[in-house]
Length: 431
Image (tube, rainbow, N blue to C red; front, side, top):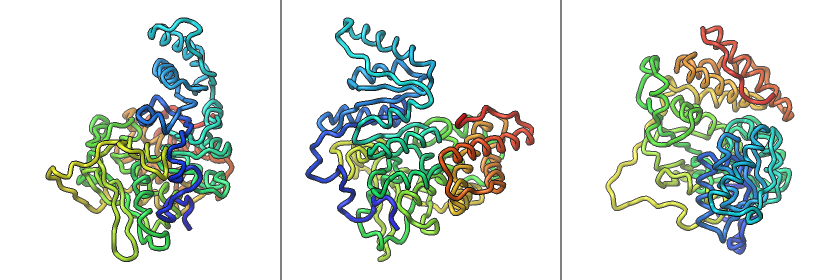
């Protein structure tokens, strides 16, 4: 069963994406507007003002100057910050930015400011066609659910929404699976490739992985990996959590669970292959032996633009491949001994229910401990495996149960860290 409808046929979703509606300006809400995904989404919007208009923004609160500048540039109706203490700072940032631009009082409108733990869900519920969720961590789950319940289409860059709350997200689609569109380059690639055939013709999904900075090393070689080495990704510039996830290949584990939930393909039919050039973003193998790949330079503006415009493409979203230049594309099998994260993710995914949420939460704590010098690199995935194995799965959790299970997983991970000689790290997640 195809759960999201993204690969059902060449026609694609019909809700707001028919060719006849391609010229209609879509109203967009951006969650995580000051982060990498958010700033690139704004770049896409600015270059396509006839296609998209941003009506609301959400930031974490640590970059209120940038958030204020974005809001003034885009003329949004509402702005949210996660930290209640940042509301006054944001208001002051608006006046400072307006003064810097030479505006007089009354020449600009300060948008409605929402602050606090519920602000993200309130902004996600703002009237709009599309909500792009680019926040990091499982804190993005509640806004995803809020946006879907408000009737918007969600362009999803927040892996944890599906990994931690898969059953809840699928239920919130309300029978219209086309309202969830991927932003991650791998899942965007799969959605594009799936247009090449009917769902019953699909034999296998193939996720590509760069291999991270330690491609080709054995498990023994990884024993002394330092923080600085693990943060040196060969292709992408990302935040520390995502970069370490790439180094352990935990990101591919999360993406495997996400692909299963996005496209309804069994775990046995999803494969991971190492492709160090990061030009083939993923592939779909069909039952006649053909494989369709999506190829483009590593630039997130393409999948962001496609998600905002889905199923229509946005012209000139990014520069294309230069096929006049000699280059090689290589593929290698995944070394599951040195990098066991993908197999562990497959196990957690098959357990279902709350197991993927535990998998993700325990990993976040293990990564934090590694970055703090409290856990060896090779112990990250081992620790996650211990927490997952000890967990009693709840098959159909509520949102509160998902958050409770995450807290328990973080606490369990920190007990193991402390037992191993480290100190407990500050628990993330939800209070």
